Length: 638
Ligand code: ADP
Ligand code: ZN
Image 1 (cartoon, protein in one colour):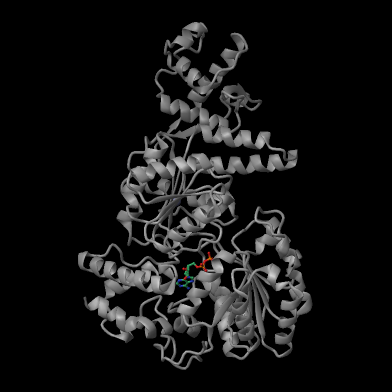
Image 2 (image 1 turned 180 degrees about the vertical axis):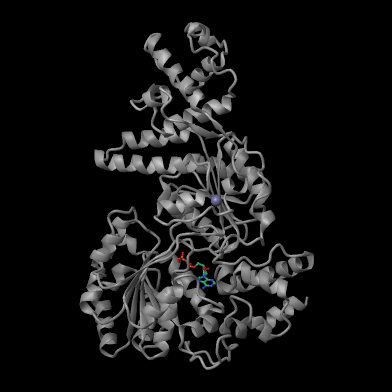
């Protein structure tokens, strides 16, 4: 397969004289996109010109094009093949499939190939035909492979190294891979070949590790905006979490693909089974399942429409399905980094998507306990506690979630208009008095006999309920009995959660009994004001993303197409999807590799009547126009 496409593409709008080897022209001709996103253009130009780069971009930000476009441009200029280092063997097949669909000569080498097949690809590589070759680091670092690279290099046919998921080189993160450490050899052995390292991990520790271990001191650093404007963040208090989840899916995501994260395998199984009985196409995924079952479920998620995967965090790395419409957390994620990475798997196509989380008191207590009881050293525990506190502050926030998220990554911003707090400013109340009453309640228990009690009993006492336990312990005679009758039980839970989240109260032991922390004194003395949100009882806060599809969120990098479609257009969209499913099956590829939903929706809406018009739609490159143009026009004509 040749990378040079003979079919005339519509000339780029800017000028007809742009050479076919210009990055902008390649973006348009090969990928069918009208414009680079954010930092992409600068990165592409820098790398194409032969510079080294370290690229930090959020999940779904568009990292692939940052090396694919330079690879194509440099190949067309006679500079040979780009080697893409990727840790995710499972993903290479689909990535290369997508490049083939776009008409780019590319291949992957990994352990899944038969010997014959591998040798054929090696021959293609050595002949200089390939534009991109994907391989895992352990393969690249074999003496045999390095010798092949050397031979290419000597002939001037080694154009670029792209090191994907570059944070794998850092022991700091949790994706550390020993094999990545050897990649500095590439720089030592092939000093003149430009290198671009890419990651979605933003923290400064990891960044420093990457620079040092990959010897990227001379590389230019590109930090893209971490904002994902099309994702709407919503965090609700746990009430009946499974039912809340079901309502969320039914109200906003009927028939959509999504991921539901739970903390334990057992909960994954239960939740998936329950969703199934409720008619949702849900599949479980966790490390305890058979490898074959896991593979099958992941495959169905990638290839079928509208599958919901219920998973532990074992699911996700390397899922680059662009049309995941929601990510839900039934339990608190580990920290903000994890939350952002997991929610980032929604809406890579730039269309509206939801990140939804439910959390409650038990989450806070469990997370704290997991840290306390872990084998880690004190320093590490302190770090983990700090991270948990930041996450809790996000959950309890009464102001813009996005401002807080981006602020956590060091990026200042203004209220987004596309998170739950921006959309329906939460009602708040001054809880200072209530907080003092709750703390007094705990204090009185201690005075009255030194025993500790859990939140439920404390709330009963505060609200003046004469339960069996209350009379048994004589707690109706405490001075705190009934002092909080004016505050609802839900509000008391919120107060306690906040006090625990803020570290004023500690929950300990099997029964989560409550004790005062040192810092409680300031609150008791009324020195620290406490402002809380009024529990929402998760009333439907207007309609979510679905109802508002088409209203473009602030500064949207990925501009949503004008959905919702009218009835006739929806019919065309459905017909196009059916056609796409057919093609995807024939090519043994996920549907989105053929065309994204966004592209099909735009076709259905704009109803192009000729190949020329079709070529103007974002996502239709020259190769796809040639391969599918006529069929699409036929489907559109009905
Ligand atoms: P990342 O690797 O950073 O998570 P990808 O490279 O997978 O992100 O890109 C995310 C999605 O955005 C892909 O589906 C890709 O086709 C799309 N995309 C990237 N850049 C552009 C662009 N300039 N215009 C339109 N779509 C883009
Ligand atoms: Zn907001």
